[in-house]
Image (cartoon, rainbow, N blue to C red; front, side):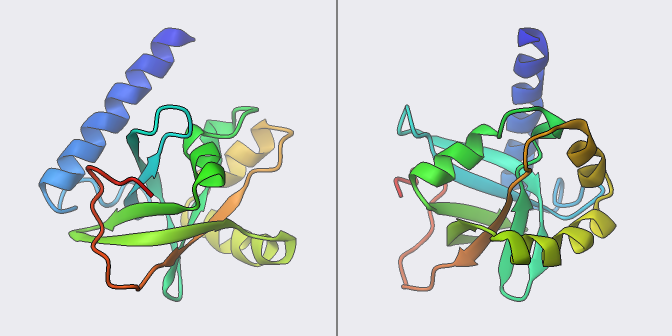
Amino acid sequence: MPNWNAAMRLVFKTHAAIYRLTGGRIGANFNAPVLLLTTVGRKTGRARTWPLGYLRDGENLVIVGSNGGKDVHPGWFWNLRANHEAVVQVGARTMRVRAEQAGPDEAARLWPRLVAQAPVWGTYRSKTSRQIPVVILRPITDGRAARPENHAG
């Protein structure tokens, strides 16, 4: 499915560009709230940005590594495993975060809320035999500015 992947990359890049350009006024809700996640490519070292649905859990943001129900984790998940720091944009606000995969108890607590907000995640879970990761993004408040364009971890 190389054509599908190329088409989806174009859709994601376009979505991220419009979101960023409008400060989230366009693209911040797509059947669920959407953020922009910018990670450092584990192989390239280049910034990579994905628009992703998320759930607020207190001050934390929760994302799901569903990858559309495919049997492989999404690239952003592997990037976060290699470098736990990332930058997110929520609406017009940009912040640095530290990612950690939710443990079994925390994932079990969050999963019903995630599926209630975006039922498609339940559909994706039924399409794959892999354990879909639930990832918690915790804000980093050390005073350093977040810069998604040149994020280097």
